[in-house]
Image 1 (spheres, rainbow, N blue to C red):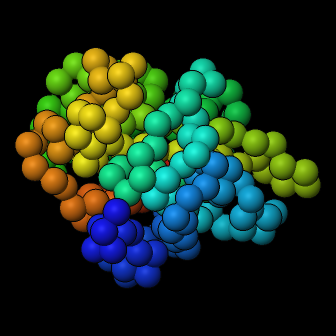
Image 2 (cartoon, one colour; image 1 turned 120 degrees about the horizontal axis):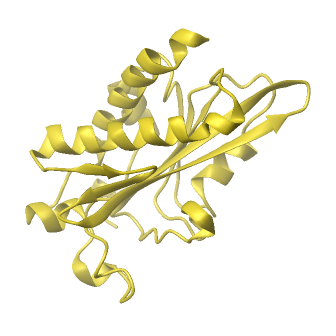
Image 3 (cartoon, one colour; image 1 turned 60 degrees about the horizontal axis):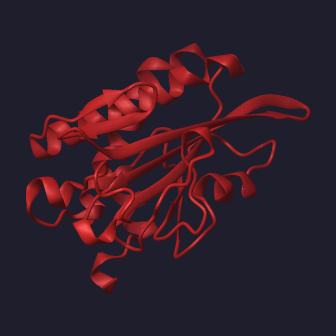
Amino acid sequence: MRAADALNADQLGADVDPAIIGREIFVLNETTSTNDAVLERVSPTTPEGLLVFAERQSAGRGQRSNSWESATGIGLWFSFLLRPKIDIIDSPRLAEWAARTVAGTISKEFTLPATVKLPNDVILAGKKVAGVLVEMRAQKNGPHIAIVGIGVNVNHRVEDFSDELRKRAISLAIALNRKVNRHELAVALLKNLDRTYSEVFARNS
């Protein structure tokens, strides 16, 4: 990964200027999973919006205990803390909201027909380009929290995917036949997630 390609927490924070999501941003070179990295930073008083990017996940997770391949420096792997006033059993609402926001951002930014395969996959040209994992946790002496994890295949080449995934995974770079600026895409995603979260969930707080 070239230094010019690396994500920078200060630059992201300056360009996002969030109301909620991204009010505190960390960028890690490597972690087990960004969901774990957020959970490690949460205390009963941590405000929602704390967000962690990782250039690489060594144990990224998908739905149904599946692993998520997280190649170094070519995707967007991030998670953030929310405190939505919804029941834990309503967590699929969060996954659907995040997936639809990711699909909408891809469609708008790149004029690509991204769609959502409920509850949590974003599909492009019949293949998975992004996914969402929501984990809700009960907290002692406080309301439950939600950690929303998002993975987007951005600048992968075909050979960056494992043999198993090549038939069912795609990246934005493959679809566009060019590299994508990860910083610009991250900013667009965070702005849209922040705006739509406020519209859909925060008004119930």
